[in-house]
Amino acid sequence: MQDAGRIYRHIASRRGAETFITEVSMDETDEPQTPPQLLVILAAIADEGIPVQTIAPKFTGRFNKGVDYVGDARQFEKEFTEDLAVIAHAVARYGLPANLKLSVHSGSDKFSIYGPIRRALAATGAGLHLKTAGTTWLEELIGLAEAGGAGLTLAKEVYAEAFSHRDELCEPYAAVIDIDYAKLPDPATVNGWSASEYTSALRHDQANPGFNPHVRQLLHVGYKVAAKMGPRYLAMLRDCEASISRNVTENLYDRHIVPLFL
Figure 1 (cartoon, one colour):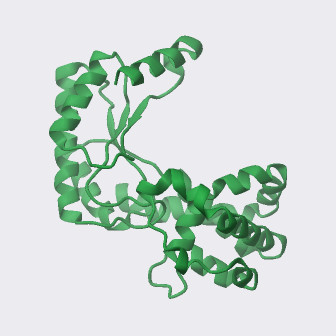
Figure 2 (cartoon, helix red, strand yellow; figure 1 turned 180 degrees about the horizontal axis):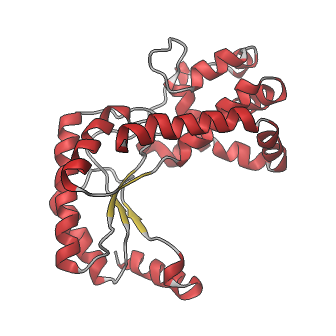
């Protein structure tokens, strides 16, 4: 927390404390933090004078990138509710910001725990930060593939590059992915896929026999491939905007916002 305090003060001194929102995240540790440990962490944050607005602990269970929660949903609900109580106590006791929220990383596509989260929020009136950035990138790829033609070709190229560099792409995310390399199709196979076959493998629909969670997780951590493409990738996003925006909107609104808040 002393390191976090130094980082916060460094940023605040250069751009102004009112120009950004501060989050402290500990979700990629080896062991989950218990609610009592979270209280100690929040006390240390207050001692450092960090105006934290969201905090992301590591919960029990697996929060792998872009796929559903793996673990006991009942245990998660108990933990989540206790963490909300800890935050409410820390706000009152230590003077932390009143809008301090729990942050769930990686929060996208954790469909089996959205019910427990919604119940806890409704019971307490607490807020929530759900981190979903990676799943939006995957919806971009789905939109490219759905568009067919050059969009599909580029999506296949992204997969081929990610497959070729899978070790280096996966290494930083070892704590939050479970990929069986033997279940990743060869790029030559993917190159022969139709738009429907590509999107079936990638879109998170567990009822679809074509869905491949290993492909989804690899491409989730493979965003660097698109970043290196630079203007070529961005131009294709513009060309395929209609199918991309439709997929991004349906995913965020229908599959995330509605079950959590509406």
